[in-house]
Length: 149
Image (cartoon, rainbow, N blue to C red; front, side, top):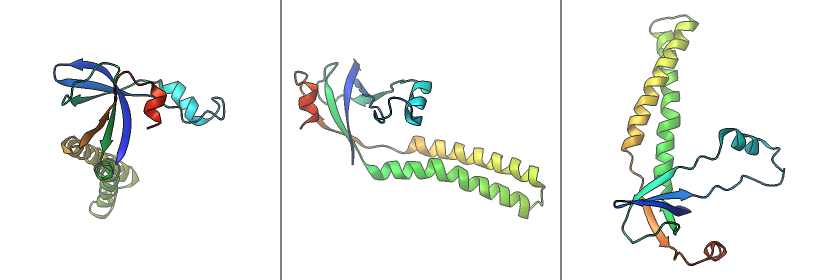
């Protein structure tokens, strides 16, 4: 199980929007490593995760969520491996079945990889991630007390 503590950023209808706190990759190099450079280049845009309300929550309250690891591995296999396998199928199919030159093989690999990506995207949308609320922290606890439990 993967566990993460998130903060309630807004409540709308029967949905709570949770935001994770950004943690720096490291602080030993004073911003000269690749992680810090990429962080500065791409910004710190926070995504909000919507979850249906099952318990009363307040904005600013901390919630600990858990996610099953096996679903993430399955999702990653679809997203990363399927386009790659499809690219190889397209490339070898163009070579063995149609005897296309190198440019045709590359074009076929790109087309098949795009098809694999679209299939993986469709399959990824159908996978359901079972996110469970493990603990809801009272709003009056200081952050140091939450991290130390």
